[in-house]
Image 1 (tube, helix red, strand yellow):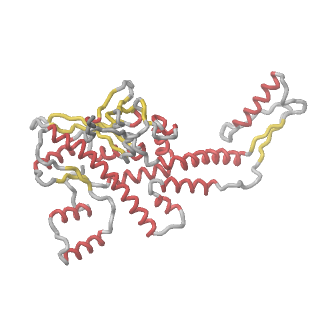
Image 2 (cartoon, helix red, strand yellow):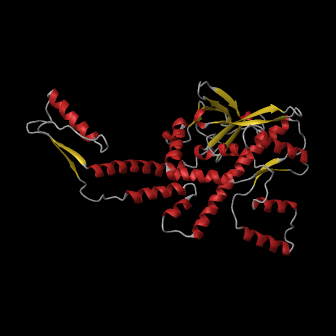
Image 3 (cartoon, helix red, strand yellow):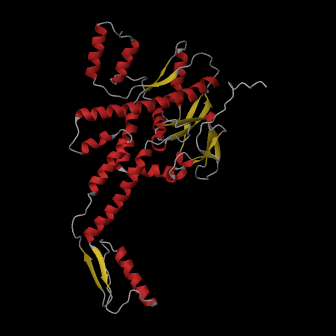
Length: 402
């Protein structure tokens, strides 16, 4: 019996663990589905180290300039058309890129491509890339081999379920992670130190309050049996326990002491065995290290050097540029290509590019270019001059920043 050729058949699957539209790749239940989104949201907004790291990433990536390149065989007309689309949406290009960076926190970001007809020439153009917040997602639509087909959304205020197909969307992820539609949050490895740090800070706050106010203690009057079954005695002892548990030193502090009862505040017997400041600082370092942002801790200590900070910063910038490359590739594959297909273009289409974000000393660059040009190793052509002017912020890709 002849064997069927399998060249055009997909035999295997992606291997991600999913069921009924929900992905179970994450082994911690607190980081799955909506609870995971809430946890990452709390980490970003409540933790100073996490918040400053995300802010640094966002601001650095915003410094990249975006423009359009023409491939071999492409036309200047198509380049102008794409630039007009980037500038003509209901939001700015930079607002869109900033929203796309939310994938850093949650691992993924989703946008819906919305089009309109341009009245001047009846061409189809981008109206907007509509943000679809991670907190509004309901579940994924996944095919039999494990590939995402779309997103089910339950947005406020009416919370009605809607379906957005992948063909109409832009789906950004920090990394493919085995075709997992949820990618992988850059805060994932920071969860453990963040969790311990959070609880230690809570315990530290309680301990500090107790040390400042003193440990409240109530002495029962003679004849009161704490193990009594009498209802009045049980109610009295319960009220006393509630008093010592809830006492606070503020503008409304004060107690009413029944006759025969003794109340006092015990002072701390001495220094604690553990230095919570050192422990919290250790967790802060671990949080920063997970996203290669440990350089943010150098200014908080008396150790570290300029060379070390520069080396760590370069590694950080390299990882940021890879994320920008990922954003650009999704835009070119799913948005730019579709835009020109809808308009019936058959020529090689232009593509979106970004400038490097790694900062070098302008003097070093000028010396390098001068030496290379002096030995005819490079040619100061139009493209190189445009790049140098753009890098030095002497000019932009266009008159208005995208």
